[in-house]
Amino acid sequence: MERHIAIAGAGIGGLAAALSLAKVGMRVTVLERAPALHEVGAGLQISPNASRILIDLGLHDALKAVAVAPLSIRIHAGRSAHELNHVNLGENAEKRYGAPYWSIHRGELQAVLGEAARANPNIDLRLGAAVVDANEDASGVTVMLEGPDIPAPVTADALVAADGVWSKVRANVLKLPGAAFTGRTAWRALLPIEAAPAQFRFNGGLWIGPSAHLVHYPVSGGTKFNIVAIVKDDWNEEGWSAPGDPAVLLRRFANWAPLARAVLSLPDEWLKWALCGMPPAGQPWHRGRVALLGDAAHAMLPFAAQGAAMAIEDGAILAQELGSDQPVEAALSAYEHRRRPRVERVVATALENDKLYHASGPAAHFRDAGLRVLGSRMLLARYDWIYSWRP
Image 1 (cartoon, rainbow, N blue to C red):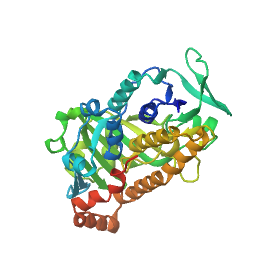
Image 2: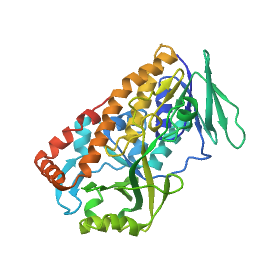
Image 3: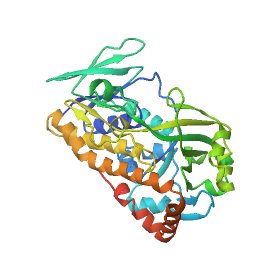
Image 4: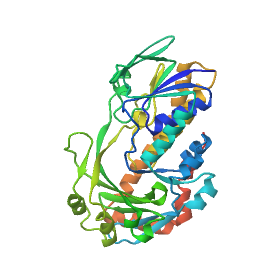
């Protein structure tokens, strides 16, 4: 059954959904506010539950050229630098889950998705077209746009909002509350891989400590080193990102181990982001012919490294439901019914990791002891329910 689906947003979730929908025979119009797809942002992690979807969309070779399959993630105590445990990834992850665990630059992933969308005859990618409102009736949904050329409205069978944590569709069409600041900020930097300590160039790193943690891993085909520092913080900036002062960040890690501080001392420039969340519990993801996807539905803290993966999964399930012969409204309801329990469990896992990573005092002592006893294989097995998932 051919349907015409409009998607608000050409980020990772929107483009992946467009490709999944086109694969099942849908005609898709992607409406993006920005006039161009710029390679902005920093690194992210694409675990096997998401990489298998991207590979099934025919993107393996293009992504492998810009991604890295880190050999492991090594977990350190922030103040002592002691290694508490590690997770073997690389070939081990691909053998265990049937798909790779990749780290990748967000802009490069978006570029691969965008190129595939442009090459797909079933997808119309329109830039400089911001979705601001929509009206629906029994025959479809009419999407109102803003842009430099005052674009004409788009009529489709359904509208999917993949327009991010500050979704206009969520606010203006579904009249739902928006995201809230979580009291955490993420400081991000990207460096040439040669700047990184040699032991970190092929592995991911997670350093945990009171009220803060540090993550780093290679991206861009192994040519860049991505660093993310998370701290408990207030937010008094205009907008939701701003340049960060390296000296301010280093003061937040004053009592950490010299090696961790050496990593944090590498960048001359940081960009800090307010981390905002939108717990999915209690808020609908769809109404009639309009549905939310990715951060627009369930923005979450990044402490399970599943934000992008959940959006990619959303698109795969949305395509399955809209590709069936059920009415559009029923298909969107089925999509939400299938996705919500899993996403809520992932959100809960991220919140649990927030407490685990940032523990102090006796709680941190028991955490560290538990990680040492658990062992590498058992630590990875705790995430089997995430990484083994298939649409």
